[in-house]
Image (cartoon, rainbow, N blue to C red; front, top):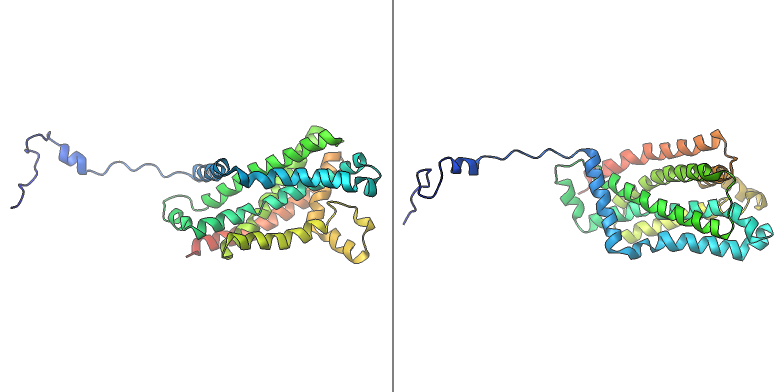
Length: 281
């Protein structure tokens, strides 16, 4: 038995209610690039809120390396821990922040393995927002690590001759370099199969670059072949600049060199990352 047709004359329906019900509502405005990036940055920070253990590296690594190297090797390398920490602390701050940059690749690879990336790409949003938002949240983590190192250093005797302005400039230059390096890990996050693979590759790259640099000791004491590598190592350039800004001896050429290297890395790996992101299946 068929039902009677539904019309506006049907009892209980006000005139025009059907047409109002089936008419298309006004579409909400499409969010802009900034709004999308901030939403994804907030999403990444919420992960830290619900899984605070993932901040252990940002907290423990700076503390562990600063204290261990200052008091274990300070007397042998510089005569006293208080003298050595003036040289060491800018290096351990760079070391800690560079290790944290790998999260840019790990988080993207985790979204891929869980299928979340496909859902985001089907949404009418600014596509780079996922990656840019992740990098913004990483910057917050880097600031925390840098603040911990500086705070700890002040407690154990670090005294930057460059003053607060020099320290702030050093942290700013370090964040710019870390932002550029994060694009490298984002590229690997899209290429490799598992988050563990991204972490392993990052350690294989970062440990030689950071230990074979001027983070912990003066290259003047190294063999000639190793010193030649250390002097062209971009991490050494970064440490020299951060150390110089903190102690008020940095040159314009050093700061410009770090910014130029960071810009070159972004210019290469930024478009490559977005191309992989668009074509990822």
